[in-house]
Image 1 (cartoon, helix red, strand yellow):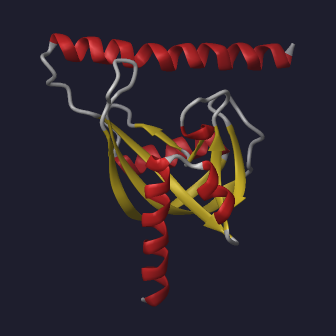
Image 2 (cartoon, rainbow, N blue to C red):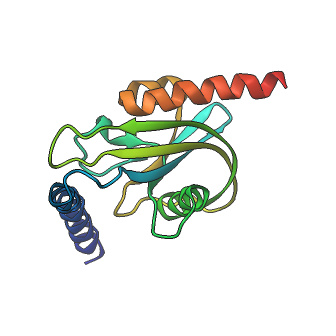
Length: 171
């Protein structure tokens, strides 16, 4: 029964994720394109040469691998979003170090939304890594595997993180 509920939750979650951009973009059309992009935050955590990624279930974008993160809620700061989403998706608590970059994903299709993402460097400070959930399965991968599995949007974030890491070592 538990396996069925997990599959059902993932199915409903995928439907929800497909429905939200259609609603958002329909509203944006009614407002003549005056809605801003949605705010997002993600966290890049490296530990012993490995990066914590989230494998999205049955995803066709970015090979399904992303840095933990998500959409900002109403009355939430980006740092709060990053910590909340990280905890929800991985089961771990994170301490944010610095921002490593901001990234725009301009929608080119009606079933996608334009987003503005703030990426943070972070370090795990507690919690227990969960085996997975409706949003995906967290996994630790080395830099080579990480680079091979990320799409361009997230590869840019990784590149900027690596520059940040080198600057941090030198100071």
